[in-house]
Length: 578
Image 1 (cartoon, rainbow, N blue to C red):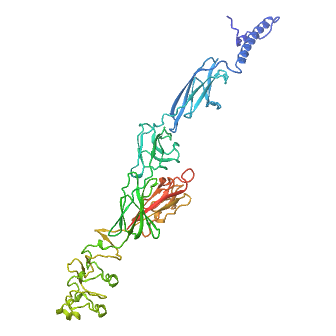
Image 2: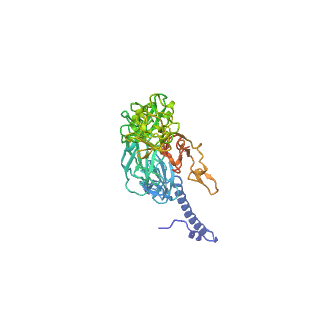
Image 3: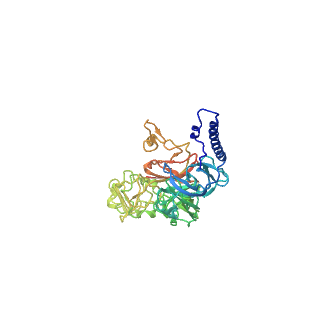
């Protein structure tokens, strides 16, 4: 079959000059022009045929979700797209498009020279439509609207941790103790987040963030739902485990009883329930309405600083607040040591200071003959001018009360005086005792066997049964935490862990958006004599507080201001012991 395509050989066959009548030249020229015309017509027809829309479409789209990590190590959700060339004439590749949902606009993903393409960084939980538009060898795309599509719902990265298991809470000591079992060991696991809501990763509603399997974080309400999430190193969270919890408000306990003691009194109460933190005792003076609060974890509490008539009641409290008050009981309390509390022989001469016992401290009729032992009052124990006529009642000194063989001692050494009563403004001697020797006063002022009916014991140190009686002062109150207005630490505290010092020699406060306040101490007490702490008030602000130096009553509260905790109160307490 002859070749009808025009080529350079056809040009060479045309004579370079015309000889004769020129018919041979014309014949060769016509033949070449006819071939050229045929080639032009065929090319034009083929070009026209491919200048608008390519014929056919790709077919057989398949989608596969893939999970990889990007260059920074973060998880990425991709979709691997494959297809067949289908009926496209002169197929040379395709453009790939995608859209989220059913109403969105198609977004261009990229071009493929073959029949595969990967659409990257899609969002988990979203349904996507993938469209493949084939392209022919002339670069002409197939009809976009008629191009084939396929749908896929992205499930998300396989790096999401599984939910924790066996999530429980107990309330020993009036505070929660959360615990759970570990998630299945897997790569990229970072820790747990205990929350009051499902907004994983957000500060509001978060109780604790920990890698441990326990937490003592206190929720904001007595009852509710707690959520425990497992978190990956990429900041993604799996499904939470939930737990419904409730701690009832402490009920009113039984009424207290009051037991008078040698010094002060005991308040007896019902034992502290296992789900409570402590007890508050309220003593109200019935005359002045002054109130005094005392705190303890014990069922017996000793008070030695009150005197008068008081109403006493108490209540339990836990991590959320106070319970109901008990019924009140009334009692008279005193700081005076009664006679019932001084045993025979307890007050001795050596225990009575000089001038401690004088006329204005001895009640009329308090010293009688039966209270003065034989030979207890001798001349050496009666000072000069101690016994005067005006101090001796008529008929008080009789023969029966004066030892005859020593009568001359009235002006010198009287020896022993027996019977009757000796009165006066001053009796001086080295030893006083009763007839049985159960009561004595020696020359050092020690008193043995005495009973103090009234008055006050005043001294630098008081001991009971071998133990020192210490002075205790308890205060409590509220501190307002505001990251814009905070207590400036002293220079000494700045050098002991409060804030930090820069290389430029300047002191810097530390964390931004942090409130800071000093906890007050009881008057007259030093830091070394005190312990202190903070509690939540109407919020959980105290959960974010900490002590830069536990030996300094300076508390800081972090994560305040925009996006964090609102300004507010935290409760404080401080106990001083000397």
